[in-house]
Image 1 (tube, rainbow, N blue to C red):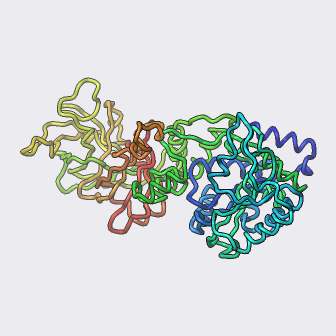
Image 2: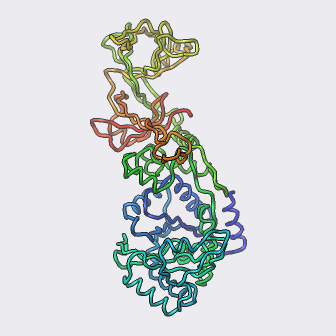
Image 3: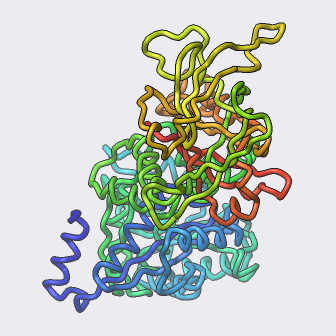
Length: 543
């Protein structure tokens, strides 16, 4: 049980909020969700489910300049993909009329005023935490003048940036958020839902707590950077005398080799450093989905990371481990050769094609078996042969034996090179008494390698992904550099490979998740066609 659940269980025992639990997930629709949001989704929806409560989806759409319905739709898709469904769907813009009335109420109570200062003057006037700030020269306007100016702000009489509405709290507070925070600013911009109805928009700190209150939220669960905002959250609820939810903060998710800033992720997309928000190298949920991560793997990761009170950095290998663990149970096995070299079995009949039986998933007997054609000429991995092998190399070399998976034991006799000295053919013989399943097949050899038949294979494209950044902390830069200088130039390698002939477009596009035996887990990319299958490497078999 984490500390948030302890708080909730204590509230239930004390019959607080009539022992009800109502959470919410409140993303701003200004970008695509990433793995950090996935943790928050799992936490908010998971808590609601555990305690028989409800979880709302509320879009914090108070900044029309950055928000778009594209992001709204993507967020809904991501939440549903993770396996959750919200009880109610709301938008902060649903409450613009009520928020405006509450702003007028605070003005009438002498707790808010219109300020004509520039943003620079306001920032300067706030000062520093160690000494009081300077009061605005407009702080003591009359209620009547403030109401008149605020209504004229709403009517569109003033240009952007010319005036703001500020709460009148305490310019000497050590909490900088209490030094007369801005409640409303002027933005002559069309909103994705309200159009041009409004030209003033509430700030997050004014909209968030009140939105929670309107919806009857009991536990407003936020990441740790909002801890300093909590006194202001409480102040607005108390000043307005409205339902007061409890804000609880937890540590946000930070991964090494990863950027979580929406602004920087947007920069990667706009400047074409990646192929889009769903690029499999991105930490976005849609990027993880396209790479081949499963919803269960992401949920398991969120549960394994847990809920902490202090920020820390999680190794991205833990996320990869969770993917590997889940895919091992579900992915269909197939064979593919990434870096092919031809293997010729000299004593195998020229026209014979056998069918070898292969298990689709040893972890799941119900997955059944498949037939793989076996012939004289095969593709094997170039790395599975070494001309001058030492004793620690157990795979194929001259005069050494290996087993071909699901087939026979072979022994290398000689190799053929081209004019440049590159090996183009590996020749061997096979022992017909060692076919997998035959009594003699139990003869031990030190290695088993995979293969596909030259005559019964097909070409496919694989996209091999590495970490997008080459250093654990992409934001750690030398002077004059940015996080972009830490991009990994080898984060994507595209190769033409050979796969089993039975891996048809219909099978690949319906099964989706595959284990390329001895290589890793791969996912059928939406770019796949009848002519060309495309696979994204999700994660290797081992760390």
